[in-house]
Amino acid sequence: MLNMVDERKMETRNEKSITEIYTEHTKTVGQPFCENPKMQTKNVDVFYANNQAIFNVSLDIGVNEVIALIGPSGCGKSTFLRCLNRMNDTIDICKIKGELLLDGQNIYNKSQDPVLLRARVGMVFQKPNPFPKSIYDNIAYGPRIHGLTTNKAELDFIVEDSLVKAGLWDEVKDRLYEAGTGLSGGQQQRLCIARSIAVQPEVILMDEPASALDPIATAKIEQLINDLRKNFTIVIVTHSMQQAARVSQRTAYFHLGKLIEVGDTNQIFTNPQHQLTEKYITGRFG
Image (cartoon, rainbow, N blue to C red):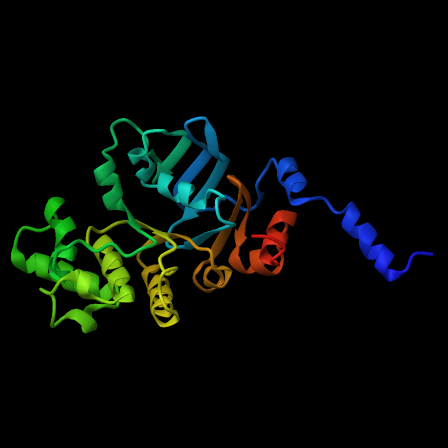
């Protein structure tokens, strides 16, 4: 008769490895599609030269939702994010297959100007990257080059409105002509968000926007994301499962380039359907 220790050892021997589970995975579990998509990706593959980084990913991104992309380092979530506004175009060896649609239109169509696309689908990077200009000119730069204003009064309004929406106006309204690089790290990141908002995007992509910030600045960014969802669709890559749980309505779990599971954020974190998701959420690896 087996004792409890022997039973646990047998269970461990019989349990499939992470590699075996991943190898057997062929279809995304959960709800990768939604009723009112702002963006859609269909059967997307991404290659860096001969190395495949993304495998057959299909995912809808809903209007005015925050969707979090989670997974261990190197799982492809940032690569996938960069596909959504063609940032991977800047990498010569990168090749993308499949369809990526914004309001039903293929963003990789030859007639699509990437610069105009990036005005509609803005990007906030992991490390704050304000221009070496004044706070005012950081915000005004995009509206100027895209011809969104015809006079100084209109530009002043866009600058103030963008800073208000980014939760930064009260902190910088008396120092608009000082260098943006002189702000704190958290303020710089909110400045970059304001800069993105200024060109009136429809989607905002965020690649670990709070990973380099202290807890207080992180909390401000997370509150800002919750506020921005009223007017924008947001896709956020994060290594913090707690952050994903706080800010997103849907969560997508990636593992080694495959989209393993997608669902309501609460469901993903309390009742994941796939073994890989469950093992990641419970800290078995990652």
